[in-house]
Length: 111
Image (cartoon, rainbow, N blue to C red; front, side, top):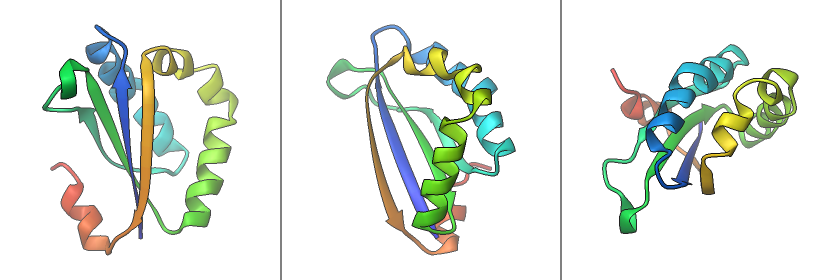
């Protein structure tokens, strides 16, 4: 199982809106596209005073990760949907992709 942990450093004053748009618009679209969203939300700590957020997703393989991301982020549903509301609030983004056992993915899932 592949786990992607994506972090976002947000532009000042945009954290609450970013998290809302992600929860209400982006995550439902990701899930409808077959992408397994494990968790998402705001960081509990503002590193160096910056608002930050995260998105954790799971995939069966690195190949599936690449294929599903390319299909989703290249789709009209994303580009004409919440893309601008999300991207306009991001100052920078960082992702790591690691291999983990299935139970580790389940442990990250919020009840």
